[in-house]
Length: 496
Image (tube, rainbow, N blue to C red; front, top):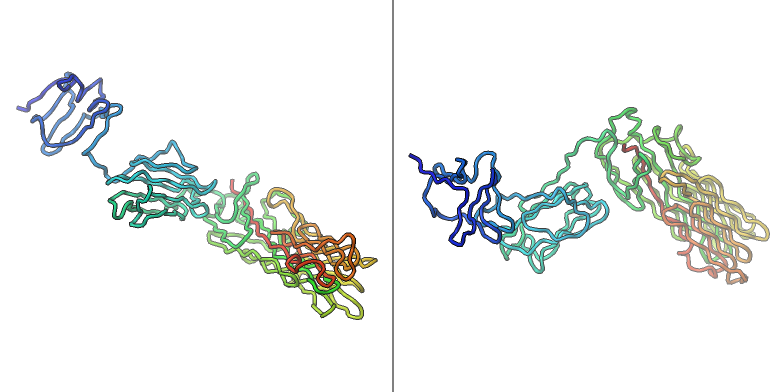
């Protein structure tokens, strides 16, 4: 016959509860106690409450605490030892981490780095300590999560921080000993998500405007489409809006009396069929080149601006290439021809020498990606802009203004890009840069000082503006002031 002891409480000699039952809740230990699993102390097959419910029972070598429906808990403030861990953690789903914090052993954390990178400080290592982390927003690639051990402790045998940099990454660290420290026992890339009915993508700086996401690239990168839209109209929702602006050409630089303004970088835009923002006059829908994306990676090239008297560099997205702006030219003291490009460079002329300005929309696309620069009989013409040609010099030998750029709201607010650089003047007023980042030409110089002298300026950064031109035998400053502005690539699509 099986022996049974029926009690509601088991207490020690100081009348402190060791095991207590209240209703169906069984409490092992009291505040401040350590509950340990050790060898048999009392030989019995079962401990039962007075109502007949099991508190502890044994069958063979299996010991069961509580019965079906019971809650087994440690008393408030009590700790446990001897039970060990199965390698799991308690995930803190009610506290998503967004800034640097110190982890606790036995806990797992969902970390949201979409607002910026931060650090998880590991607790002081003790054998068996365990900490897990997981990428909450799949943003570890753009904003790394740093794992930092306590003091001089190690991770994988090396004293130093670890950066988690894969989108969707999850990792579990267990402290083993002082030799190897924390060891990553599990590393996963949790890339499985419920499929959105719209495009989902990564890359660049991501902002939103209403129901649209905007990816802005101010330097080289990758636009990665994770999945495409399945909503109607498809593939209409997969035909993205884009703006691709190349680097502007550099203005004609010193020495010399006159330098032509740099041509703006090529400007190409396409407003998707389901989009609603206010596009520029150069919107290529219809008649331009549509880009319908698929689930793949698209390398992005953002062209740099040309140096003084240097051509701008191309910008590229998918099948769309915008040509770098043409360099500004000068004809005295040594000929330096204006360049063709997205927009053409202006030409500086001094009799008896003459020269031609650079042509725009080279190579040709529809709608045109830019306009030609200007040349003058005497003086310096402005570089071409996205929507207007550069202007010739005006009496008395004022530098010609650069051509106007294009204004679009693809980023959510109206912004001008790809203005032409202004032409220089050695004794009158330099040409102003075109709207959209065009640099100004210089006014006055060393040969004929002007009381209102001002140096040329470079094209605007990430506008594709042409550089303003210098002249007057170097009196207008270094050629770096004539550089064209770097380009930009913007991609926009419906995400909800």
